[in-house]
Amino acid sequence: MHGFEAGFSRYSHFDQEYSMIIGLFFGAFARNFNYDIPGNEFTPPSNVNWNSNTAVSREFNFIGSIPILFEKRWFRTNQNFWNAEIGLTIRYTPSMEESEGAVDWNGDEFFNMDLTTNPSKNPG
Image (cartoon, rainbow, N blue to C red; front, side, top):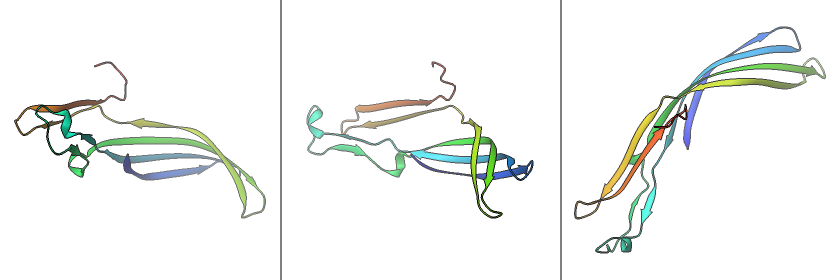
């Protein structure tokens, strides 16, 4: 899955050693439905394979996220330090229903796929 996410973060420094980081990010992630079906699987057999591996089948999911992190720094010198962060990220993506299908040379549907992106994991 390819995509991007962009946003901004606000650093709030409590003192030299401790900070809180809060951000707001948005992104989009793409996926393709790729398949390859041998032509000899059809009745009557085809002399070519039926496949799809193109950007035409690309679907996008959009997300939003809010990271909240706490940071602790250990200074070795004034300019060098080690740090550790702990926190959580709240993400949101809407539910989506998608379908992909293909028909053969006789107009018969030979491939049908229904996909539901269901972030709440509730049964259909």
